[in-house]
Image (cartoon, rainbow, N blue to C red; front, side):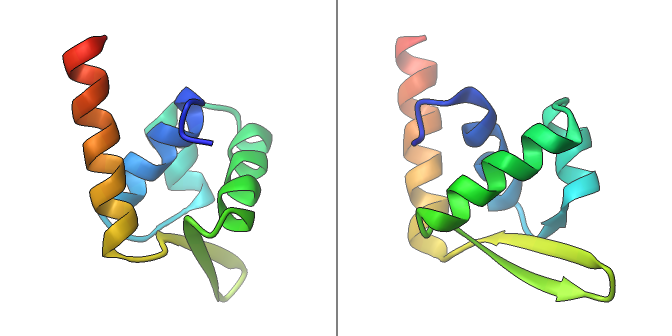
Length: 81
């Protein structure tokens, strides 16, 4: 799940706080349909949560344990990449 670069970028962006799909599209440089598809997979895996705010869907990491996991993966990638 975390081996996909787009999903990892999404989680890294969300580790800084809640964001909607438009902000995540900008943050990752990915197309909106791709971002939505990856967010769906992350949600099914229990790594992100979603809530509605009017017409927008706001995504967040599902807890501090996910934020720590993302940080560890990014540090490991920096050491080995």
